Image 1: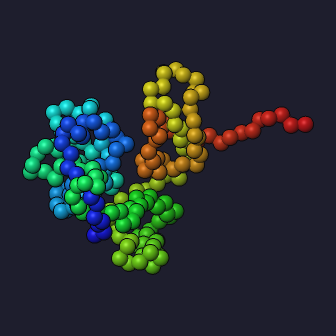
Image 2: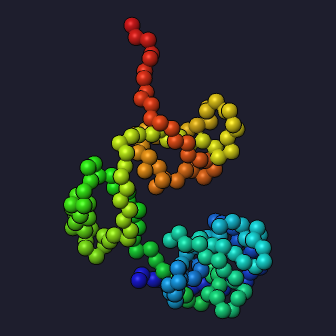
Length: 199
């Protein structure tokens, strides 16, 4: 476990309410019932003044959402970097977790094992691990993926659509996330026909 010592000060609920989502804080690194005696870099999910009852929600840089009561002495609390504070242990990101969706044409158990072995050989047996495996039969069809504003008016002519992505398999769509404030629109794939008159 990689940690670094950071000089920080514990904040009160009143001080946290003055923070915004861009302010870096530190919260307990414990996740899903796994207690860790250190902290993780985090940010509030919305401006502190928008929370009520002294309870705040922070999202760590590792994607975990933590509910905190800064004034509760039994909890780890919320900390912010301060040269006049005390030293705390902060968990560092040691790598990147990739959620991979592998499309294997005519895939079999043997071909999946070969892919897994090749990845372990390339990155190291102790690095590449199977966290979960969901084998899904992928239909050999393609769709067109659009993004449009999440609150698009019904009956709009589609002029607000943006970022067309072609040749997307339907099962890949569920691994993608739209831009903030946008939503995905999936339609059957249509080949682009260039009907520009030629001489």
